Image (cartoon, one colour):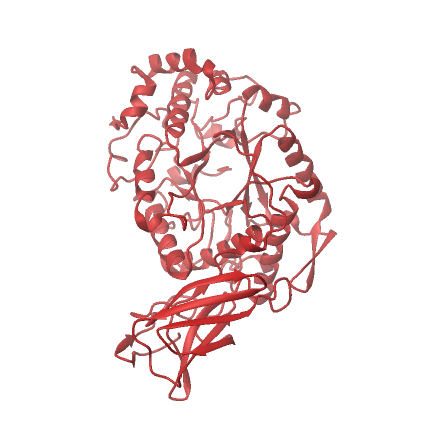
Length: 539
């Protein structure tokens, strides 16, 4: 998907402090939106917001009950509202433990599925927010289109759908997964009417038919599908964040979580896709959804003009939760991923964020606002991208510690270990799913190096039980990338099948031995021993 990745290497609402039962509150200014959750302290904790039947049940606890009129007021805010400004949807007696219950009103104009909840009290004639925001965390309780996942192994790639024999070629390669892109603007059009939350939305029947045919064929072959949702220039204005509609020429824009019409449209897109590609009732099946591409690359793939990390992450999480709730409420078995690049603690583009910082902020915000079962999609390309040796990277760019500037396949264990930290665990206490949804190696400096790099990268990925996918990018070279020494395809532009093709065909099979021996001779040491050692050798 990185058609222009070469650019990377070429280049509450309180204004003052309020004392409530001895607790001090302060609001923080965030560019472009009203501050909410930057309070130094909120005495009430929302422990859960769960769908139970046709109701939503919110449970809270409080070590010190804040003074008010004796009641807690639960506000249901839209994602673009902050502080006690939405509607009071339920009340409960103020106490150390409180329970609120109210209708979910699913798929109506008053649906609470995507709303966020806060607790407030009445004090001195006004509202005072006393809890952080919290979202519903079990949308899968609604799912009526859940099908078993098709995923059987990690070997995948980005197919060249212009090849006449693309399906036959995939069968020869033995790929178990494919990843593909859907610019959501391509969905706009007519031919399919879909009613969601009381409104009728139209989707492009021809686009849907094209994707249906493609995905059904992959499904028929037993191949799992991952779909990356992009918000590019093809998207209508109401799906782009208003801050991103400033004339900036980018390849990806933030989803609109700031305007009522855009939020509703986004929710309808999520629900439609989740239902239509659930695999139920003869429909095509998408097992995995990646929301955006390399979202930390702000000026390249998820544009907002603000350089404030918290603001950017908050805007993304709002969209992520809309897609998460919309898809999971249709298909409980779908996996939903964010997307980060390999620039762990060094920027090649000053307009982007470090992937480590973005990951930390994303996880912290999710935990505070209601933990969900999100997955991590990561792109551990070599650094620089045109470096042909995956097994021996530049010592100036990476090392074997969490302070490394980049994370590639050579030091990928650092990321895996990082995700083992208690604060990063999924709600079930397990390590989150990690998808290498994009990875490629160049043959511009010789097919032998591409061959060895692919063998090393795949074997490394396969050594981690936490990794669910190794998606090779790409099947066929792209001219723009070849011009930048990024001939990453298994096929050259002239149709020549590279040595890496024959390698990939046997990787992950009992027949891989001779191919791995060949890779070992190129590297100069046994590739499996090198992988098992987790050693980082640099040059």
